[in-house]
Length: 260
Image (cartoon, rainbow, N blue to C red; front, top):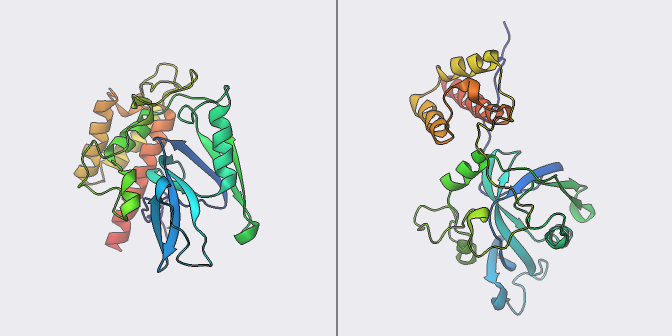
């Protein structure tokens, strides 16, 4: 008998701020950015609006840097996070994509950021992925985790429940004041007939796994299916099925850890 269950995966710590890992980091930009200046005090970041740049840095060893911050879906972490960038290489690459008529605003395609090296030798490469309709699952995640990017300037929690809907960032393709490239695709239904469906065996595996999980978790999956007009597990598109299966396995792992 094996020591660990076949489906075991260690639970991961949740962070609302994206940190670029060594290698490939794939994201989907979900909101317009905010811009400002970042200083440091007592080993904590202090951010200022564009027109309020401090005259000098608090710490001479940490110069004030220009930053962008926006909401992304981090594919590696499978969640909505804030991505803040001060690296000029990344900023300039995103600027170039926005101005390129073949790519346009970065809402209609995923972006891969490759990180190599360490310290002063760290290098970044930004590669766009061909335009593709956004998965409704990402939109659902975005709407379930409202974010007030302006809170960064007061050191408040951008994800606090105290913020009103008007305070929080809008999903990019729904922003009335945002200009888009004609190539920006629309959200497509999860049950797109062009998508390949999962196999009966895969659907049965998910059903058996969910039967052992808390009802609260199962209800959240059922609500997600209802929003996407999904009748059965066999109607899931493969990419959506993979995400839900992964979350179910993580939930199962938590139960194992608690029972250990």
